[in-house]
Length: 413
Ligand SMILES: Cc1ncc(COP(=O)(O)O)c(C=O)c1O
Image (cartoon, rainbow, N blue to C red; front, top):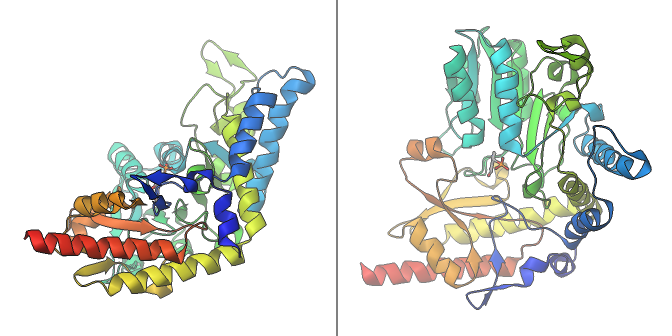
């Protein structure tokens, strides 16, 4: 794989930050966009803009409807889903999970029902469940972690019961980097008839997803972590489940029968996926997401996973060699393309500031996983995350910057 050629497709990577070439190691927060995605959005907005849905005006208006349908089919193939109508447009992972928590939870959860989450979840897969549990009188249970940051599946077995309605977990932790054993989780949950929702925000650009093979019930991801635009995301759900959940926002569907007192629920329920979406979809973002998936397909999963594995191994090994640096999470065998760490005597905010002076963009704080940080007994970590456009040389710059920071703070203290 020609990384230099791939980098040339990302105009932003040519920038300098504080006089140094940008070393972008924050793709777990948001990835950069290749020219193909930027061009697709621009082309749409300059040549084709129109609204998808509602009353179409002939051939021009139909373009937006066709474009949305085309990308919906693309996402269906991307996830190996069975039916494009199982793809629901949302604004991102957070909205997708809220749609299930509120649309399914408010309707079907009974007091005393149980929901199982894990201790490594991002707030997006935590707070919506805490909210709905409070509202419905449901009980939250948490899968504990092993000392190396993996889900303790023996404990999951003990938590599951006939009262369990749903298990919600990330596919890859945005802090620990842990790749969770989804198939095993599904197998366990099924024995109790519980549903499984996967927060795939950190998976979608790093590993192929096959919702049918995994056997999950709901899966959520965001376009902006997949080389695509912000403001667009996906909820995939099994058709029969989507038919049993309520919209997050009412009023988007074009109601076939609507009176003063309401609408004909039978007619509305038939209308998947529009029933769960709003009108005025962000068509240019959807088109951009389609271009992002084309980009991934063109490079191919094999090249993507091989390259990112190499980078993660190099980063993990090099970081572990820095005195006082402690990597959080599992070893390389169960780790996705990110490494979070602490450095003795250097606060993550100071570290990120020093790295910023060298043009290195990493993320420091709790990464919206406060529960996990509390559990680890630390307020913050520094996270370096990798994507298809990163290079071994960038990891060397990162490590040199950290060594400098360690030296500086040793002198001060
Ligand atoms: C694991 C995980 N879940 C959910 C989210 C939320 O994604 P979004 O802000 O695109 O909704 C993130 C964002 O960092 C994440 O890492």
